Amino acid sequence: MRSTITKLRDLASLRRRLSRLQALRVAEAQANFLLRVSGVTEAPVSEEVITGIQHIQVERVEAPSEAFAAALWSHGRWLILLNGAMTRGRQRWSLAHELKHIRTPGKTLPATSSSATIRSVCTQRWATIPQKKPTMST
Image (cartoon, rainbow, N blue to C red; front, top):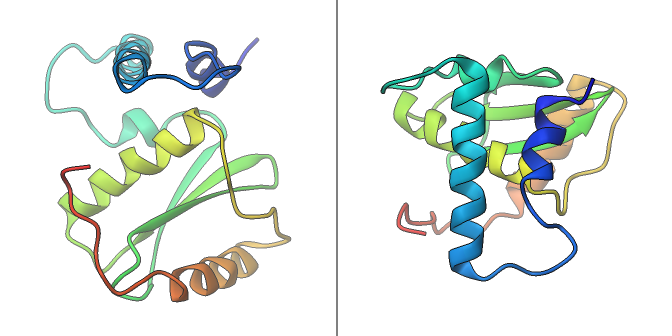
């Protein structure tokens, strides 16, 4: 049986670059699929829609203030690290944003041997992020 993540990825053509309009259509189709398989019919959408996906683990960790979140593949699952010092709204937005990176594969951090090592890699990655925080409009 194919995983939910694989099914989400199947909705996108990964062989070619998508226009902005095509990418928005794919994202909408993926969101509708996820809501359908989760049984969600109205807002608000619970975090459990994402945290309940097989092979996804979410942890809230201490991180530099300019770091919002990171997603890494390790030990047969995706680990999404959220900056626990951020507001719940920011953590929720970051969780959805990291799912976007998972459902649309691209660059990820290397697999590591333990959660402590993953946190270390994230801390190193977050240390390289410029101090300017991104805007929510993109």
